[in-house]
Length: 264
Image (spheres, rainbow, N blue to C red):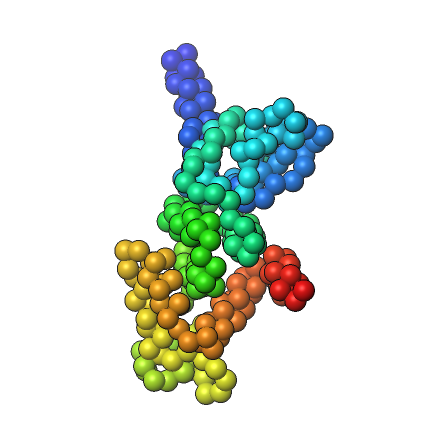
């Protein structure tokens, strides 16, 4: 290879090692050394990425006040190993930190993303959905939290390919009957049921239509908010069972914490 070819290759490699001004959120962090932390971040264009934030634990570090969960960030990092090196981080602004039940709900979203998203697998539409969801959580409107979580769960499952077509029965591909009852199962997808509280075909078709709009989070939020309480509860149970199945757990840690606090 010529010197010019070697230089071009080196330049090409160097160009792939540095990411600048990347929109991101911190999903989780843990200690790496006495002064540094490992961050699991969700980025818009590169998916879930692991970063080492060197010196972030030092009292004088500018990163301490910036690297917070549920806050929109702009990151610069470099490296081609499994764990990259954070170079800088800035708060991107937009909203305050959620509190109370909204804060725990945000941690629940983070746990879902950590468990269900592979590293370096970009999901830009899901990133935008997450950003919108966190913004609504930070608004302080407690009555929107439950339908908002259902809307996010539906969009998450769809984006990673775990949500079946909600307009037909999964195994037979028969169209749903508006007055018949159907339930969503981890194995077998959407199928007809005769007993228990279940959503009718008309409800599933409403959710299917909302998923197909240009603003699916808003449409799903409105749709879930309009369901009767027993239907919202049935939808929650079915979505949670589906999520737990794909996460490989019986219950998520953040959900256990929320239930324990609600029992006090």
